[in-house]
Image 1 (cartoon, rainbow, N blue to C red):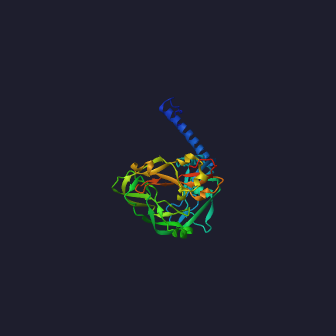
Image 2: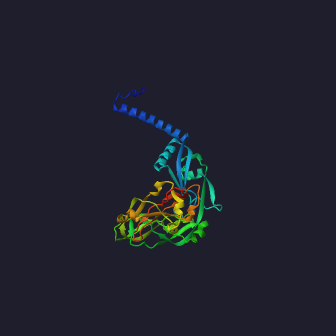
Image 3: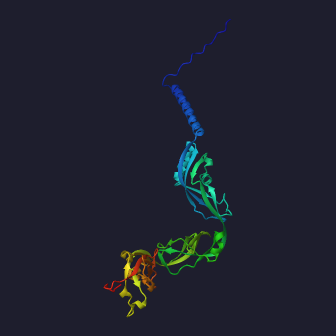
Length: 363
């Protein structure tokens, strides 16, 4: 007997717009998308691109108490990087978010050299600051190519006094200086130690504090010392100090116009002296002799009559000059008033010139 054959029904296409039909279409689309994605990923990994950037590289020594950076900390870099489009775009976004600033602590990788300053490839610092190797990015070129870096070892000076600098209030009495240790470059240790050094704080505004009440004021220490007009970097330990202050009264700042007067030797005013008969005072810019000064003090004391501005003349000023004599204006106040000039004193230019015989004799 011949066995009966069972014929399978022919494959039937799913009905159009049925659930099976839609599932089939979705599977096809997913496969196409997956293939496209793989192609793009392969292209991004396999092929590199180049992009140009600019940034400020900021070098620091962090919390290190062993070395100090004596060379400039900030360096402007122009550079070109090579990498995948994705990695370059990620770097670009992060750089923008960080304000185009790259920061790197050099105290871990670099040590002071015997010759002082050393030349370091900028590409090395850029790689470390931006962690480019971890992003799969390489430095193609960078300008400048070399950065001069001067790291120096530190030595400690103990018990250095710190003076409080404050505005906005008159104190019952200045608070006693606080004392801290400072770390200084080894090459400047003897010079700074011979001063002896004194420190000041950043200026603190006390205008919001209540008069008559003792307050604790914390202030950061300025990290420089000036010696003969030259400034040296130091590291205070700790970086800030606290003072106890008692405010006598609040102060304010007002702009007050004053007239710069002249102070002459007493002999010029004696009978028979011919100074003003022979000479006249010429002012280069008359407006400079009526400056506007920023004066700090109690509101009730900020009056023009409480401000004296003058320059002092001498017999040496009678010598003929081709140009002008320049002199800093002396600004003084009544001793019983706690007034002070904010900023630098102005300067004026003048000369004593021989009079014509028919000229008037008033200065």
